[in-house]
Image 1: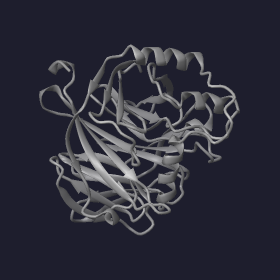
Image 2: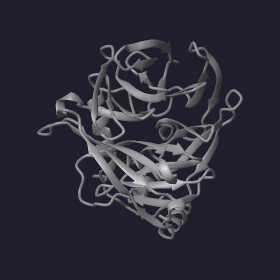
Image 3: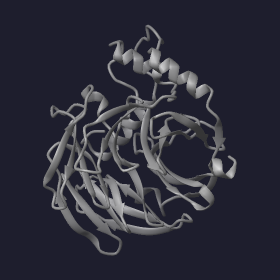
Length: 348
C-alpha cells in the first residue's frame, strides 16, 4: 500500500490480483511454497454461513472503503477518499457517518471501546473518532508511517517498506506519540507492506506479497521481530510470486489483502477471484482449516479487509469488506458481508 490517493490504492489491489502481461518463462515455485500447497490440499475445508450483507445508503456515500474494525458491537468501515467512518450495527443496519478532516486519507488502526482509531496518512497522525462527536484526540505518528495499530494499552506504527527509502520497522509509541521502542523488520523492503494486527498479545506485521508474518512480543516494550512462515498457504499467484523473486516479472502479485486474529488464531484473507477464502493458522503459523464462502462466481469487487470476533457458542464472526474502486466506466460500489464459522466445538 502507498501514499497515493485512495482511488489508486483500490486500483493497486485490483492489479495485484491480475495475471502478468509479461511472458512467463517458468511456473515453478519454491520448495517451501510447494510443501505449503501440499499441506493446504490435505487441510479440511469448511463452508462459511452467510449471516447478512450490508450496503451503504448509496454507492457515492462510500466511494473508496479500505478497512474495517469491530468497535464493541458496531462494525466501523473507514472510507479513505472522502475521509469518514461509517458504522453498521451487529445485524447489518447502517448507523451513519462521522466525517474526518479534509485530506486525512484514513485507514483503520483499531478500536478502544466504541472509539475508532484511524491512521490519517494525509496528516501522518492517529485520530480518535467518537460517533456523534468526531475527532476527540490526535497524536502525531512517526515520519514514514504506512500503517498503525491501536488497542487498549498499545500504540504501534509501521514505517518504511515498499518504495520508501526508510528501513522497514515497527515502532511502539507512548500515549502522547513519543517513540518508546523501534524494531527493524528483516527481509526485502517490497515484502514489508501490510496492516498491523494484535495477535495473542503480539504485534503482527502482515505482508501482502508473501505468506509470512513478522511477529513482535508486545508484553514488555517491543521484542525483536520473528519472521513466521504461514505453512499451508496456497494461492494461484504463487508461480508469479516465484517469477518475481527470480527477476522474470517486474512486480510481485498481491496474495492477501488482510488478516485478523481472535482466540489465538490468525485468519488470513486468501485472495480469490471467484469466492471468499479465509485460511486459519495457529499460533505457530500452521494451517488448521480452510474457510470458503457458500457461493462462487466471478467477482468484480475485491475483498480488501477482514475483521473477526468471537461469537456465541464458540463460533467466530468474520466481516469481509468487498469494494469496487471507481474507474473508467466503473462506478464505486461496496458491501460488507458477515460470515459465521461454527468452529470445531460446534462440529464444523
